[in-house]
Image (tube, rainbow, N blue to C red; front, side):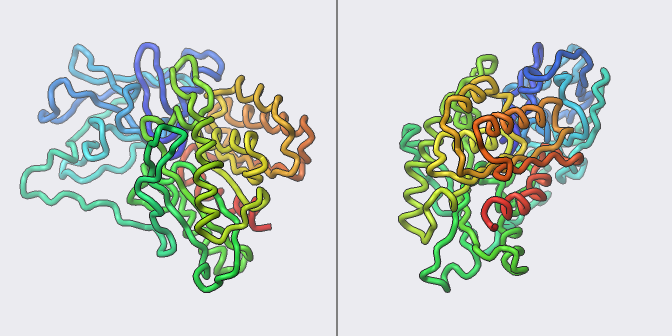
Length: 406
């Protein structure tokens, strides 16, 4: 994950409250009454009595167990959840009992393909049935194997439990990509890109809803001679249930999440980057140090670029969840010294939400008003853009080349 909000969240009931990106659309988007209702009319008889059912999908960063994603049990035995009216366009999703191990399955206990639907904004009820749960296959039936690892040989886990002293010593997995030829060029130094939601960056086996394929993209660019500099990539896993807290410096008053983004950004700038610079051959100046992320990760990346322009001079902002802290972020942007030497790359699809591109444009206008040169800002809004890993994977190459390979 993202992703969106992003890493894993889902809707609630009366009123609908989301911990995913789309919860913000209910806040930031115009009022509307047309909503889509998801209704499950049949579940396996083996479904534990009283156990909650959840929806996880592209509209909530594929979080399988967020409390706000619960479908409410109805008197007739069905389960039901009404989505915010702002959730529109093509979406993908699945139902779970609180984890991916207990996700819905086919009658043969195999994982089901993502469900797909287009939410038109008209009042609609979509009806589903769950044939089986993956964790309830009969004894003797082989379980589907774990997803295959897809990370390239030049990606490794730097640390399973890298400490975040600014956040009370929390531990986090950190990934490291070394460019081709790193070991054969003992005197060469490289730019560094710091990416959020690290579990979704390199490896299908750890990703929630697909990976960005950053390693494949960078290795291909190197082979084709389109990346003459090469780059190290440091990817930090998100904090799971703490993701929203860590990826926003400000608390969202409606959802009581956020407020630890300052500490998280301090970790990136004051702990993780010095460690990487001390142990690897980097080009440590701001012009060769990038930070990027998608959804809430895009929000915190943009904030890091404002707070530490002397550290992060290249900022990649993918489908940013600006709605989550809109007013506070805009005020902060106005107060900060102009990051005149920095470069910003913005990308999102207009179909992601009614407010996505307009809010992204608002922060871009804030940079221009402070004197950042138009040539230092790239702004992309492809019509087919979606709040999904496949979109960010596709857009990563052009963003990287514009930020660091030119």
